[in-house]
Amino acid sequence: MFAKPTLFVRFSMYRLICLLFLLAAAPVFAHKVTAVSGLTDLETKEGTYRVELKMEVQPTGDPNIDDQISPEQAAQTFAEEVVVIYFDDSEQKPKIDTRVESMSDDQTPVELQRKAVFVGLSGKIPEGAGAFMLYVRETTDVSVIMLIRKDGKAERRFQVLYPGDFGRPVALEESGETAPEAGETESGEEAAEAGPIDWVKTGFLIVLPDGTIHWIFAVSLLLLTLKLRPVIRQVAVFVVAHSLGLALVAFQVVDVALESSIVMMGLGIAYVGVETMMTENLKPWRLPALGVFGLFHGFALGKSPSFEAMLVAAGEDLAPTIGAGIGIELAFVVVWVAGLFVLRILTRQDWFRKQFVQPACAILTGAGLYWSISPFL
Image (tube, rainbow, N blue to C red; front, side, top):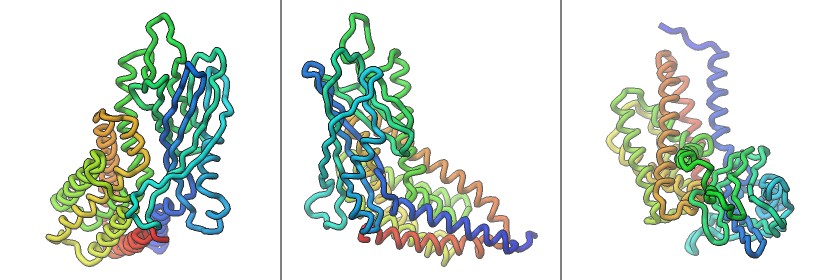
């Protein structure tokens, strides 16, 4: 049939698997601002503005580095170097203030508490300025979700600024012509079309590429067997479970700490890795287990900074939540389609199970166990 893989081929496969592990572990060590949401207040009568940014900053895990650069310093550097405030064509130099707030309740252990850094950018509106606009420099890979209020009146839609993007200009004075309201483009139809695309894109990016632990788990479900019926049953249970978890968080029915979800998701990856090494059959207990782990994936998706910021900006409007949910599911579909395509090719080889699936599951088990203890490190 097919010859056994050469030493070079096997080495390349193991190197690919190791790279997958490194990608999985990378977010734990990344010292950077992971997500930014904000609220801008423009007080045209008083002639002042304030842009308040909420940031989540992940530590490096190295006490020496963390002691040298505090979360407040990292967030302030981001605000100074990435977020640019314009009035007309004039770049502003705002005053900066920072504060740190806990995002967890009093019952959450100290080592599991989530903290957010709030950075305020404030100043005077230049005399005669006609429009306000934000710009996010290309030096970051983090998008900024912003809601703008002018004289206490909020935009109809929040703005999503990706690296290198300018936000929608906000007119500071009402003109005699029929000007678009804050949050609208010149064409009402264009504004209506732009909103859903932003919502879906936000949800998609939560999983790909940002949600490494989510798509790693999704791929791991395919390693047990590629038979259609077991794959559909596993995927269906996971989709229903994480969708339910996401909805419970979005509608504030439950509030599960992100760190607790990471522990459970890590154990889920380890469980799938171990069981896949031991059997090729779909056991009766696997589906309930996937349902439990899927719930925690949903809880974590709902706690992602981008999703939380979107909920705050959307208020009671359900459309952004539904749009983001669609984006999340589209990302998982992309993962499964790509995974099935690659694995269908590899499964034709005699060595697929022994020399690909088994090492991959061993690495996934190690990565999952590491993830499960990472909040305590």
